[in-house]
Amino acid sequence: MSVQTMSAAVAREQYTAHLSAAGLDAPWLTPGPLIRPKASAMQARLWRWRDIEPLVRRSPEFMAPGRGAALPPLSPASIERAQAILADTRKAMGGDKLAAVKTLVASGRTRRVRGDNLVPIEFEINIELPDKYVRKDEVPAEESEPTSTGFVGSEIVQFPVAPAGRGGRGPVPAAAAPGRGPAPAPTPEQLEAQRAARLTTAKQEFARLVLGLFASSLDTYPMTFGYAAQAAAPQGTADVLDVRGAGNFAVRLFIASDTKLPIMITWQAPPTAVIVTTPGQPAPATIAPGAVVVQGPAAPPANASPEARDQYAAAVAELRQRSQATPVEYRVYYADYRDVNGVKLPFRLRRAIGVDTTEETTFDRFRINTAIDPRKFAVPK
Image (cartoon, rainbow, N blue to C red; front, side):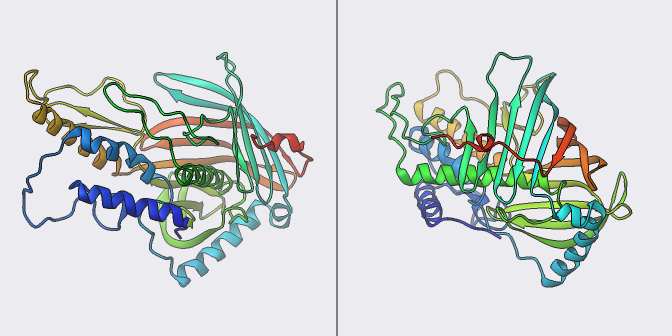
């Protein structure tokens, strides 16, 4: 399922038109392979970095959820089979008691990988169904104020408030780059597109969490489930369900065949970073989880002409763009299910990108159907 606002669709069409006029393309925006056959093996063109730099810098905006190609629909038979599996899962997780959950408060600790270190984070999660979710993080080892992220209905919750022009609420003042005129302020349409993308991202993050808590669709973020296959997992065999939602949300949910409990979800997303090396240059000793290393062309000599330097910069930019459009696998593992007032909830989560663990979360306590202070869901003004 792919849901896009009209302004987002128009912006995407305008962006691809500008790319086409510049002799570039955005293969991640349409179905099919990223590298397509061309009429000839070589198509000569001279790109000037100063001309295409604005287009390249806008590309991450169109890699946001909901900007890519639409996903194929799930078949009615797969949907029906998935519903039967999910019914058994929800029964195993508490049945009527699970269905009666209206609020959930969870607290615990997360250890997040940062370079060669594990950063401890203390958190509190507040959920009030159908459409309120906030996670508050504190880092005891750092002298920084707590951060909160989430949503209330169609409003983003974020503290500290995002800077204007980076998903914030107002235009950012134009900044002059060396040798260039001031950068144009974002239009109201661009600001709204950024806000909508951030809201979709927040709801998708919420969905990845609650698939292990409730194993169901959400009123605030409806999801469709379809049976995909049965697969071998470290815990035994698992039923694999395709899960779809707005904004090109697509994950695979693994449910243990014996316990009927969720084991993990997997999904594809762009790498966290693209590191471009020159021929003969060794790869960095430390690479962040989710980053990819690609070999680029040889750098031009110091006395190269401006045209040669522009061609090199354009070639590296296109390589970065294509590498960023090649997804890697992300995972969330659910484990250590325990009974909480008749509901089975996972007390441990682990996130990974490929084979690299990025964070480990341990829940100390869950409170079900407790009253939550409305101030927990305050929306920035």
